[in-house]
Length: 474
Image (cartoon, rainbow, N blue to C red):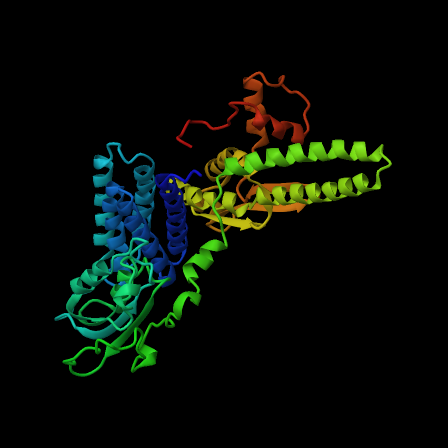
């Protein structure tokens, strides 16, 4: 039995995290006050940094750390989110993808330039005046990890060290769950901990310590009022202790033996990542099965054996259902295609100085995966042309009585056995006179040739045809 390459698995997960980061940044750029998006971007950066370090992508981890720190400051209210900051992290995100794909490359100069841009964006955002002195808060933290935590690579000592880094810390281990020596498995974890922490860091810093194991563990955090206590929980206390102030806690139910449901594993079981080539191989086998089933039907039709006919009908039904299931497995929502254009339109708006809004409809329409891949490049070309040629500048639009912001619409809809994808902009439209002049000068049509508007418009699809008066990078 072959096992997946862990580096390939990391790259797949990193690609998903980078997509989450980009989507979160683009959403934040629309509403800079959206704290949920700030948290989403921060957590994705934090996960990417930690995973990169774990798999040996040290340059990625070090670079991502700076972006994570910038968003941590936004999250803590030290600096506001700005369009410049979002733009700087978007550019940094592109560089992270490069560090994932080619970790051995020479990226130092590019990294320094991007980090300098990030520092300028953070400094330009401004900071509120520092308070007269840091205030401290005292917390009681009680936590326990799954029994197989150490076998799965979690080191509880590392978590305790991170808590100690936050401030004055007193740790007491609860040994009450340790079994007798003859029943003890040395790789199992039976300890839980009670921690008294006094820190000037925000409450979110405690959550960040447990961010990678939050789904599997039992965690209770209570803000303590009054003077520090001189004693911690007794050694024989229960693994999870009821908080004195339930409203001030983050708590998960106590584990009850092997019947406890592993929430993270259950969630992961909802989706299984399968390489596309395996689906292609399975589709080939299904095709061969349908052919064999057709031959069996012919043989059964010419036979008087009723049992053979019954078996043939069962095989025909099952192979048909299997074929239909395989077709559905290859279908993906068109939102996977449309989502790519949010970043493209954002960058083109900055590059052209235009105000551009992207509107999408029918994102749940499903298309075969191979079709999605083949549509991407031509659609990118069409959207770029809409931004460059179709939409006017804000000044031109206002002079023409239009809103300052131009709109590009992407829509998808099912029509019979086809999916209709439409790309539309509300710009100036196609200049027929310029198209005709260009076609005549290029020898595509004769001078003064009689063409309908539709025939004239079709000329723009000729290779290399452009009415642009000067060449730009668009």
